[in-house]
Image: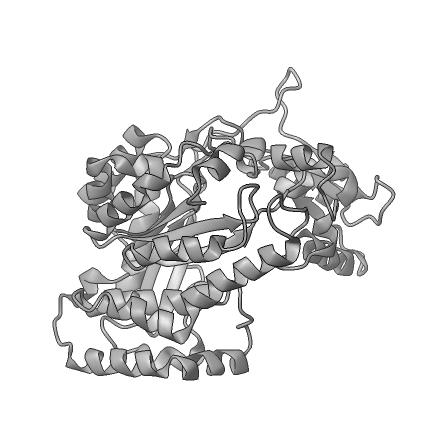
Length: 439
């Protein structure tokens, strides 16, 4: 979405306000942002890499009228310095307006407010507990940006934030969940277990989501602790059910033969998965969506999502495709088209790849598919079913246009059968303990 960011920056600069840009794309494409590559200038300054240390200096220089073009976190020897997370700034979650994080559309608020443990609001709060990933998958920008230096906050600072949010949820009602934005939440299993034990000991459990590689979820004790500490959804970058594809993109540590066991292991503890797949890999051919959907149908209900292999600038994938002459839109990020290939796949056409993507989304997020997913949890507490229903509606909007009130109304009407079933079940639910099962 850098094209949109550039447009926003241009509009702000046009009013005379200085603009500073940063992040993975700008770090790799600083000349583009500064207009040094022959294109338009979009930023007055860029912050390269992690800006924890450089941001205060940027603000001082801006106030003093001495803003430089490039800021980088370098040590005395000119080497990039990665910030420690041990002295992490305190975030006042007890005072911040959380409405910006609410996923429930207003038209559903009254319908769901008294259903289950109260689903009139569903706020997902971003929280960081660590940074970095050493795996170096070919298509990923994480290792290039954060490096393979894995750093963590103290357990105590994470728990303090969780307790603030838990108190806020108790005071305001509705649902509050945390999304740990760590690139790989369990990359250091020993540390992750320590954090989860600290959360349990402090009674700081709130429902949470995190990204964890499938290979790390073989550990039964880790999954027990995830469940005990409030974990409800785990994002797993499965990418493909084809081992050859995984080897091609340097993600051979994923073992498709283990996917079902991992997901069942989670589901047995009422933890469910957001399973991410990439179409358009070199060994993909027409029919890849149907083959993938067949596998998914044998797994516990979750949230499957689908994307296309995208060569982001400066990744090993981009360089490989560039050398092979397979890039069809070398600067695709400047003409952002959602879900459009930027290179030629090997075993199918670009149009066929787009068709496979649509098959995946349509068959996973149709009203019938959503109802089937919800009904598959009829043996679980009501809040589990409400959770997966709301999550499916929200995730549907990743691919299908669903931003305006009219689009939401159409979606709600299309899913009215499932909504009415949940409301009917909610009216029958009187157990005061159901709220402990939320998310």
